[in-house]
Length: 216
Image 1 (cartoon, rainbow, N blue to C red):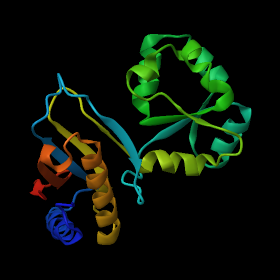
Image 2 (cartoon, rainbow, N blue to C red; image 1 turned 120 degrees about the vertical axis):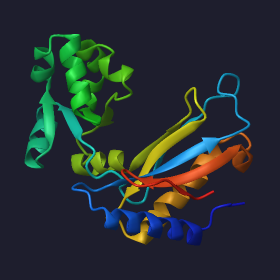
Image 3 (cartoon, rainbow, N blue to C red; image 1 turned 30 degrees about the horizontal axis):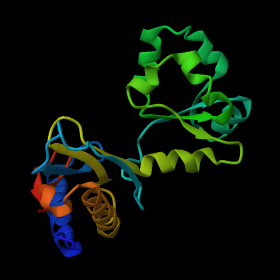
Image 4 (cartoon, rainbow, N blue to C red; image 1 turned 30 degrees about the vertical axis):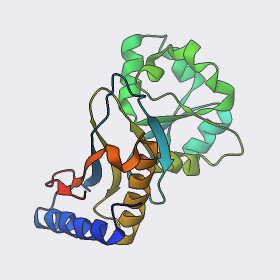
């Protein structure tokens, strides 16, 4: 049973967009879904984790770097994407500081299948530690499509606290696009919870600089 209707989501989106229009920022504000949980003990209950691809890209500016073999480096170059070759990675010489810098510079990584097994050897656990281990790509894959899949995918992961937030869109999207993303995200999150809606204390939507608006 859905407790959040598309019309309720539309109302909240209107309020957020109005607020964003009134105070124009010089960047596109992201819209975040903020979730408060109840009747959940992160110490005892299973900590859930799940990813879902949204129909509309919530974070178009997410930076993706290709760790490529010669084929993928050429493809990345042709598409104006950032990339690092095996030689570039070897130059880092397993220097933790440099690897940390690389991990910090990009939001996500793609790596050629041929390279993925070498990543731990070339870079140590640096990328894995910060949750940015690369997604494998084959020579049949389109790098641009793969990068956009990463940009469209959101992750719900419960850590030690009972609140979590994920990007579900941005203020330049149409209301329909936002409603589609938000409904899917909310229903997917609820499906991950042990007691479904009984574990949901509150749902808020907010833009980067705006006030939180209550949805549930």
